[in-house]
Image (tube, rainbow, N blue to C red; front, side, top):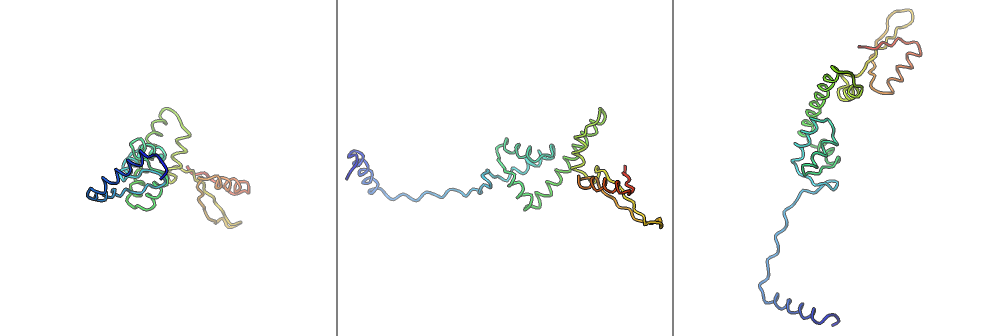
Length: 178
């Protein structure tokens, strides 16, 4: 048999010792661990850290980074899946989002006392459009009748702004609501 005779003798001696000993019981199976999603370490306690941070910052990436700093790496995909599948988590997320808008409103008020900040206005429009989006009213009257309809157009997208500009260019009366 080719190979090192000393190593071969050691292997044979080890085999003889093992043959004379009682058979060992098989090792206990390792406890099942949750399967990581997207290569992340997943634990259920990430949700409270995420929601607390999100309520303060209103930023998903910052909230996920805070989870990682506290030892729980959660991917954006894991967060999206949890929000889609878990009704309780989705409800808590929506509450945290409302709290984040409250934080923005408080900061906007603080800054309004010392000046204006266009970035905060943009954030408020994005997070609470029902309160902060600019709206226009279009009045259309049939010729000669004086009657017509009023259509409200929110100024919340580039497309709507282009529609408003086109209507104004065509002679329609477009009034901005305050």
